[in-house]
Amino acid sequence: MAETCILGIETSCDETAAAVVSRGERLLSNVVSSQIATHQPYGGVVPELASREHLRAIVPVVRQSLEQAGRTYETLDAIAVTQGPGLAGALLVGISYAKALAFALEKPLITVNHLEGHIHAVLLEERQKGNFQVEFPVLALVVSGGHTHLFLAEEHGRGWKYQNIGRTRDDAAGEAYDKVAKLLGLGYPGGPVIDALSTHGNPRAVRFGPAQIKHRNRGTPEDQQTPYDFSFSGIKTAVLRYVEIEGMREAVDARQRALTALKKPKTEHVLPLCDKKTLDLVASFQRSVVEDLTGKTLQAAVERGARTLFVTGGVAANSELRTTFEREAALNGLPVFFPSRKLSTDNAAMIAAAAYPKFMAGDFASPEFSAEAALPLR
Ligand code: KG4
Ligand code: ZN
Image 1 (tube, rainbow, N blue to C red):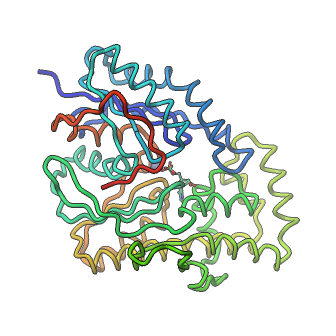
Image 2 (image 1 turned 90 degrees about the horizontal axis):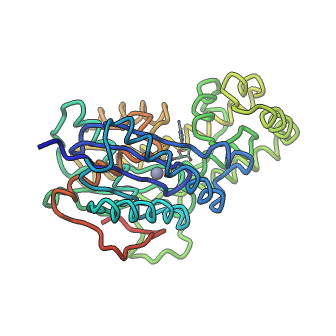
């Protein structure tokens, strides 16, 4: 019998993605159509535009993923789709398409939580390298444009079960990168450009006090608070205040105008447009965010007895986050795993991989399911 092959479909935010993965461990194709150009003028994802772009891209993206995998629709064993969390209208495009495909092909349909997908991106690549040993409990930091979550995971039957032990109280870390980039006139998305510019600045030049990065209790019931919660809206406001106090507004506007004139600005275009003050600010912002993410995750890992660390989601592509985690985890004797940069940001390979244990357990979706914008991971 041929290897079990699952087609994954992901449309929860601003990437239309399809991939074919065999047995949750071998990537046969991975197609991602990004909407960055559509959302760039707005400095963030516009939900209505995201749905429209998914509608345009879904058919060619799925077709291309099958072509690259050398598969026909008939040889697929199942179709997996992201059910949530994410933008409801965007999720619905993938779900409607996956439902129609599964119905027409008479194949089982499997729903996947986007956050579990990010976690499985790590597993998929470790298995691809031949590493099948994971020591539990695993502490997974899922850190992206929409999420900053800490999950303690244990094995449960063929799959995993999760306990959410920390989360952001306001902005996600990636959202803070995007907002800070926007207010400094650095373009969208903010993560990659701030990552690249930070190496040119002094990360100790601007001091963000703990008050800027510490979460405040804004009415969260006591039983829902944890010592591992995050908050990133304070540091964004602190950057804004710094720009105003230091009189950087004019330079920001000029930079923004210069970059808008370019179609796809690269670091070599942005760098000459940044003075030392800007580079120092960007490096200091990144250092604060990275120290907070690594500090709380390591604290949680030690206090909750984690044996392995996973760091995943778009922000896991960050160079400084990776090196800091590697150093700090080693000091604590913990192995730490990241996906490759390609599988850190949204993709459908992670959805097809996360669906495999569900396929083996016969955990198929009922035809009535719908998108769940705030789907929890348990
Ligand atoms: O996982 P993802 O593709 O989508 C969500 O589920 O949100 O993550 C996108 C986020 C954006 O906020 C982007 O700025 C951030 O990941 N990001 C980065 C880097 N690359 C992408 N943040 C920091 N450093 C990076 N190198
Ligand atoms: Zn994501």
